Image (cartoon, rainbow, N blue to C red; front, top):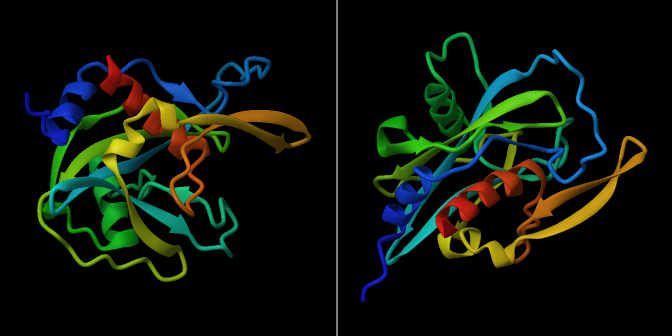
Length: 200
């Protein structure tokens, strides 16, 4: 029997996703304040076909940035006044960060929101890139644009849990490394949500 098309598998997974997640999922001792205000943001989980392989587009942030320098990230950012939806925010950021035209995407759905340690409520917008495009990293913001096979990020066995000190305490987090790229934190947690749904 033929394996289902990876996009079909992703679309099926989006109908089975679980609850929202946070950077504190693996740290049950953390008590989050009541009434905290989270800033809305969105990231684009964009898949592109390369010959017979489907791959996820990721970025490596510039090393001189004040926030998350050198980290692996999904294209995205905060909701601006001119954005009429979270989808619009994710597509705008993808155009600014990697040169992906919004008309070159087919939206597939959303993953559950993710709360970050920096007080953002991030909504992952899942999309298929329709045609090949010229990747243009945003000068000063994005050091590199690269792709990872969908088979890698949809396999829960590729995920691990590590920990490091953050603000004086140990904090655990998900990782899903690929080659020279250390994918961790919020990006790995968001991708883990998709991998878990794809296994259901």
